[in-house]
Amino acid sequence: MISAGLKSEYKRRKKEKRSGSGSGSEDRESEGVSVSVSILTVREGDRTMDIERKQAELIEQYVNQAESLTGPSLAGLIVEATSHPSLFAFSEILSVPNLSKIEGTQYSRYLDMLRLFAHGTWSDYKRNADSLPALVPNQVRKIKQLSVLTLAETNKVLPYDQLMQELDVSNVRELEDFLINECMYSGIVRGKLDQLRRCFEVQFAAGRDLSSGQLNNMIQTLTTWLSTSDGLLHSIQEKIKWADTMCEADEKHRRDIEVRVEEVKKCMKVDMDLRHEEIYSELGVMDYEEDRTRPKRRRQPQIS
Image (cartoon, rainbow, N blue to C red):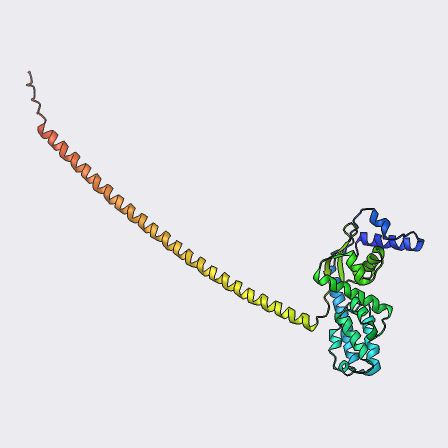
């Protein structure tokens, strides 16, 4: 689902294009307003799953066709696959054994073109255009879309100047139209267009096919991560053991203190009992001595 801001922006641009009132990006840039265009998060997960499901169906379709084709038919299939507006992954098609049979033939240029769409960019095509087949407009659009995905792999804030240079776009209006209509609408990226900062902030980008070098780097990264995780887990386990040991020591210390307190209480009680007995004994002796030494009173004779 496209945001209301994106729809209104798109309609405004179409209206300006029909009326001929659009005068380039300079007037809009001078407004000093940051225009944000984003894909709403409502049902984004479902839409992404639909795109992936459709792409998986297309891959299966082309793989099945490639397994039964040879020579010029394979070349035509490659052109069709790389021109399809909903297909952005090609490694499964590249792995079909039949494709290796056109290596070194007059159709090997089409195999190189398929490799370009799997791992390359528009700049790569321009550098090797002499050795590759000429691209039809749909293929040009596709390789530029894939170039945006490649840039988004390493940087989530893409400057307009860098995008215009990589995509051979002459002005900001044309660049933003491409990002909105060809990238966001197709669901391969989500993000915000910031005219004030002149950049595209990437929030999501579909992944591309991995080259052998990228795969090796990923394996190395995951191996390093696994080793670091094992070390961290070992460290955590040691900390847990240390904490358990300290807890047991604290518990033993607490029990020892309680025992000592009880012993002190018992000793104090015994001492207090003994002192009470001594005090009572002294008081008894004093009373006896006092009674013995006290002069007895004589009775007065009774007068009858």
